[in-house]
Length: 147
Image (cartoon, rainbow, N blue to C red; front, side, top):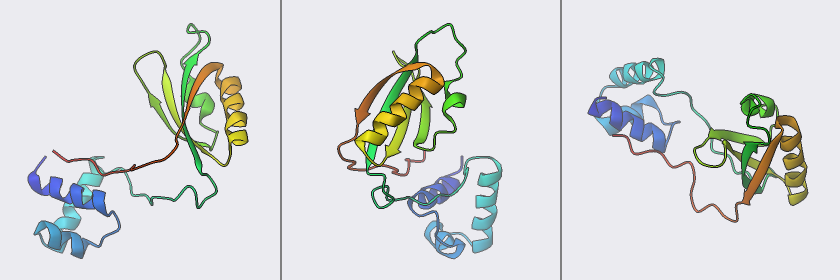
């Protein structure tokens, strides 16, 4: 990947809503050149989309937890992500190495809601769970270092 593309990605990681004019000024290209490069990065799948960072507390979802899951019967099909896809409280599902099969990032309104969600997860996917509740989040969603 070219240095100019790295610079564009770094700037977009900091602020994905900035104009092509501002972006062009920061990376030292014309607006049309930046627009073309961004479009190519999107077409190649390097940029997969743009999103707003939400304040989950303001949305009434102050409780964040990580839920590790592993199948009760390992001989069963590995389809937990599909079985859990309809639960809106699950923000992310990561396939992981180690004792667990998947790690879920969940956001809920209360401990009672977390308990209800855990029961739903266990029932829907026939899995055992291990939960870690987040006490605070010093940082998240930091842009990656582009190399």
